[in-house]
Image (cartoon, rainbow, N blue to C red; front, side, top):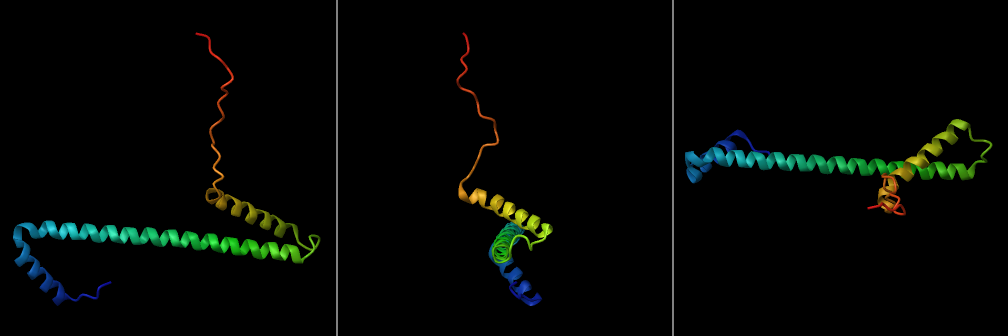
Length: 119
């Protein structure tokens, strides 16, 4: 990542030893290594999210291609397997778009508030 060689690491270690002293140097090394781990984890999370977004975009483009093919060709000429694939792609696109469209439906059953209780 930084292209640091052995001599550079030795020089950094000596400077750290002189500046921080032998008592605080191990704590500083642990702190810096923790920051590096956190940054790597953050970079991996960002990479994973970008890959997921790219997969979603690919799904949308495939769906648009399938819809354009569906419009260009008579529905009689399309095999049943392809029709099922198109339906599956459309359902997957709707499922993916649902959180973005704000169509959040509660999975909990509705509570009937018309019933009254006797005290």
